[in-house]
Image (cartoon, rainbow, N blue to C red; front, side, top):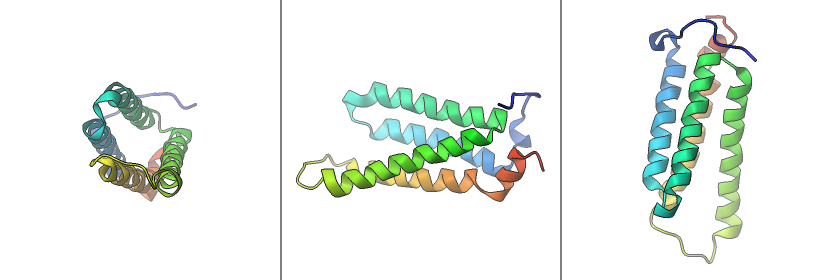
Length: 128
């Protein structure tokens, strides 16, 4: 694993990584806002892990964290599609359910595009 060797500066990060960190904070805040009250503690914990993982990626430039972040998003998106097709028909949902689905797919699309952008790749490989 690559370790933090120098103190990183936010302005020294490429624009894709800066936007990714902002998107991670926004996704965690939105997930907290649309969570049902009984799952608020769970959403806060997952949001903290989500933001912490994004910060860990920015601090270490670790390619495995980038891969794992994208893989977790695709797995969650697959579970949402499975739930929409096989589990949801015939069940009652709350009014915020479509917003949660859009949040998951939107977060997957945005974070994957930013994490696998060529500028991020050059930065991870230290070719900047």
